[in-house]
Amino acid sequence: MSLLCLMLLAANAAPEPVDDEVILFSYFVNNGEDGVHLAWSEDGWNFEVLGNGRSYLAPGPVEGTLMRDPSIHRGPDGIYRMVWTSGWERPSIGYAWSRDLLEWHDQQLIEVMENHPGTRNVWAPEIFYDARTNEYLIYWASTIPGRYQAGADTGDDGYNHRMYLTTTRDFQSFTPARLLFNDDFNVIDATIVERDGTYYLILKDETLVPPAKNLRVATSSRATGGYGPAGPAFTDSWVEGPSVIKVGDEYVVYYDYYARGAYGASKSTDLLNWEKIEGDVNLPPRIHHGTALWVPRADVQRLIDAHPAPAAAEDQP
Image (cartoon, rainbow, N blue to C red; front, side):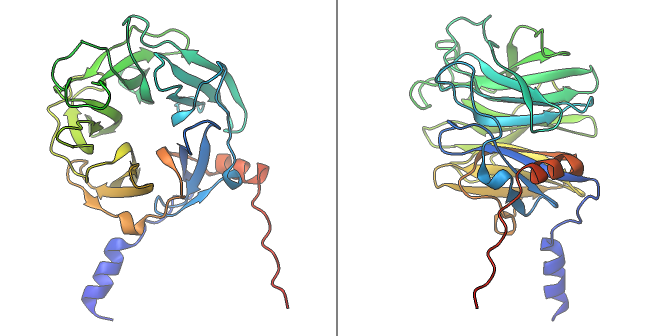
């Protein structure tokens, strides 16, 4: 084999797995009617479905709620907290917490936009822990009809989203929702990652006319605002649901090719310049809007032990 071939193989090889942590990936299937589904990975490149594809928590408690865009966060206290889109046009998010990823508690709807009457929707909430302030940020996309002129005529079905946030220390009291990001275009599906004191907001440009529907990056010196302007698109059009995680010395962002029922991924060393790695990443079929995070291996092993995969049938003579 030539030296060039060896170099190419090394460049595309999956990173070495971390001994005590693995990656958990939460997602939904179909329209989110049956709740959150989970997968896991040793290395961030190859994923396996957990629980034989079962739902780990069904949506509720209000009839007709969905569980779309489930986002799980593990806090410095070791508690898992999950938020999700509870419906197409609800001004609330779903919330529950767990210590072991098996038993979930206090499932409820949080009316995060009650100080903004007339809010049409609350989509794709996520959680970020701000170590500088010891607060949790919950942030999401909402349309408030008539609030912004820019983008009002370029979206789907009259939606014209901006990113909002609330902060909390205990998930019982929350600050009034306020603007997180506005760069004068329709935006959804943002996720925050910190690197060397800079905060990167990876977001979807939701502009339909002319079609963008791609991912861009904005930066700030603080988690709670000051982002922008957004840089150029680094993906194709018709993608959404970015989730970014550090794997070795690189960052990997996974995203949903929702229009064609597939998933993609790109990698970067600086969170600004990205290289597609879609042919090298193996994600489960039928997944939508997943969120990846590092978790203790023992927590995933508990899930595997609780719902082991069926034994393979013995070969017939």
